Image 1 (cartoon, one colour):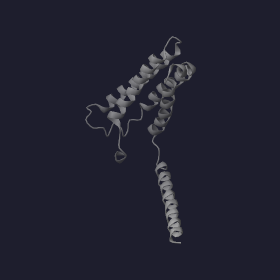
Image 2: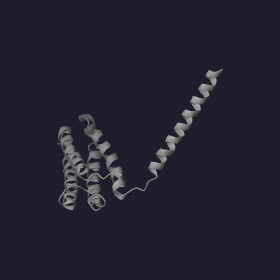
Image 3: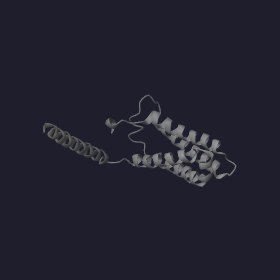
Image 4: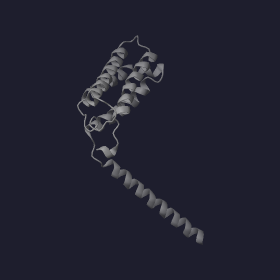
Length: 155
């Protein structure tokens, strides 16, 4: 008889805990979104798509045009991102000219994205070449995140 009640109590606690976790997740997503944050959501989606497009030769040939469009969209997002410097440039540490560094990284992101799009537009470009060019694009992302990643307390 006691086992029934223990099972009921455990199930009730589990349901209550799940409800609290769901409420916390919703609360985190209700935070105001920054303009750069909205752009980065698009970047994250495109990055996943582009990774899939260059995964292997068969997939690359099938989605070569999609990869070109995504790379051009990446370049457009890089251009848009360049103007959203605060609080990223303001709160950076250990960089002498943060605005110049920001501009250089954004320009490199735009250039590597355009280079990828131009290469992919040619039928002669192989999957391996496209993957190497895409890696250069991802390296610009890593450079930016290494220097300008701002923790939540800085906002």
